[in-house]
Amino acid sequence: MKGLGITVNEHLLIHQKESPAATGRFTKLLSELIFSAKIISKEVNKAGLVDILGFTGEINVQGEQVRKLDDFANRVLIYRMQRTGVLCAMATEENADIIEVPEDMPRGDYILIFDPLDGSSNIDVNINIGTIFSIHRKISDRPYVSLEDFLRRGSEQIAAGYFLYGPSTVLVYTTGNGVNGFTLDPSVGEFLLSHQNITIPEAGKIYSVNEAYTCYWDERTKKVVNYFKNSVIEGGRPYTARYIGSFVADFHRNLLHGGIFMYPADSKDPAKPRGKLRLLCEVAPMAFIAEQAGGAATDGEQRILDIKASALHERVPLFIGSKMDVEKATEIMQGK
Image (cartoon, rainbow, N blue to C red; front, side, top):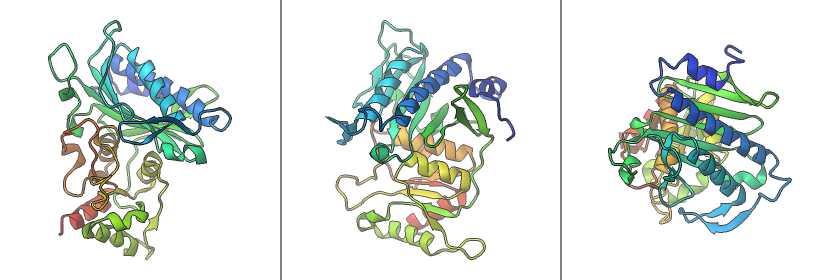
């Protein structure tokens, strides 16, 4: 495959002039993320052999039980990233508040937001899971980090990506100049370029949604799902339903093969009136990747990257994937 053999750091250096984010400090940040992912990947691969399955007994800020491997991934990322010397603060799905880099450690002006282990409910049954990350620069001129530095529009991200832990470990990321994928070669311990200049098909063949929640949806949401269930594509075939229940895995499949992933608002479910997915640590980074690959992402009303976060753990509905599919879903949600 074209480009095979180029490591992710080599790729960054080659394209540094084209990517404003790809400075030496950014390369160090990404290198530490990659090192953390290697540690997590190793633990994921032996999860059934050690005592890291099941729950810790704690409840996270989302009101969900914390799984042992989820907690492990979160601690690894916090520990490693605090020591990069290029971050000033972080936010994670598992912690209620901002995590500042301690004063006795070197600091930089980058901000990292991450979901340490997306799809963690699938850990015990050996289904693909992943880590999602979003990178911003600090905007305030104060010596300390404030919530204002985190509550941003997705369009302000300087980089975003995810690690997928499956049959192989894959890194997909963008710095705002296209999307590239790298696969971990365990024999050399390096992520090698395996998916160069990823472009999502303009229209897909797959729709991904948890139809068990149909009773919670409003009528427009039901119309969207019924459209994809009943429409035919080229060759007279219907759309195919594929839903793994791991956002990273569902998104990755559709990114490569085309399709739409939907996690709409559960308007009749008081626990998730705005859906389940978190804007800052899940939705915005994936929307950035989707758009850079030629796709689209909306909340059913507006472009995801135009939404300014109002809370650190804000949730939003999501329609993401192939551009024509997302546009059609948005039209129906808007009553057109």
